[in-house]
Length: 324
Ligand code: HEM
Image (cartoon, rainbow, N blue to C red):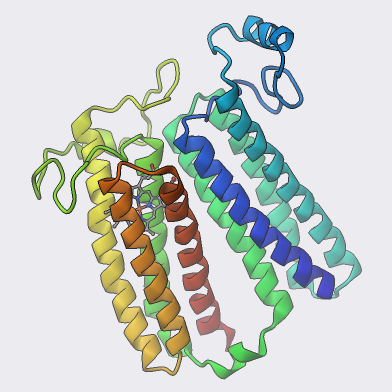
């Protein structure tokens, strides 16, 4: 079982790295840094010298080559492939090192899921950053992380978890999980629709608490992408609707989390309550910095990673409510 513990832990760390690299790729607008998949302009890594660049540009005349965009895209792909290899090893180990059928089943599911993620990575490029595809791909990244974490929890069987009894918090924990998923969807939708800078002021948006918003177009999941979706195609009111909904929904998340935290606190699970509180506060602060300081790269990546930590924290609480 030790091997499975260690490998799933490496999988968790690697999934965090892949999520961060995916955010980096998106934030430097390098989603189409390589217009093909799995190669980059037909090369295994990416074109580096003048002759290769000339070949690359003759292959894809519509996509002028920019090495600064090819690098993030290729690095993200290689790390994602490494994650796939980890999942393959995990499946092999689950057959060799344990009789636990549940770990075996979840490892196989994880491997299939990562293969689907690869397909969505391909679709992201071939469908030219279609928002619903990019959003599904990003969600897949968070799900992959959670699956590695779930296998890790199952293989570790932490003794300390046996001392925490929060089985009476099933409902509120489940609600917190659902609203967090919804909030992550809204954040990812903000990012994939290039709506991050639609409101440059805080707490108001465009100088108003009720700015002009177009929800119909903002949340139309079947948008047309035109030649490609780089930098987005939505009008400003549609982008404002997406951005502002993400902000308002953060208030709902905060309220639900406060209820969950107080219930945890009075159930002798204060460390869990504090963890959620600290992560939530950090996440909101990073979100505000994103707005006020015009999306600094590292802050935007951190906003992604803390969302992932919040997801794992709320997942742990749900796991504990069902464990007994
Ligand atoms: C519980 C609270 C929150 C969660 C879980 C959350 C989660 C997320 C996630 C997952 C993204 C996607 C990032 C990406 O794909 O790159 C995102 C984007 C964003 N969030 Fe939040 N968020 C929260 C609160 C806030 C708040 C309070 C603000 C601002 C006041 C904010 C502002 C933004 C902005 C501007 C983006 C777009 C950044 C980008 O383009 O990468 N968020 N959020």
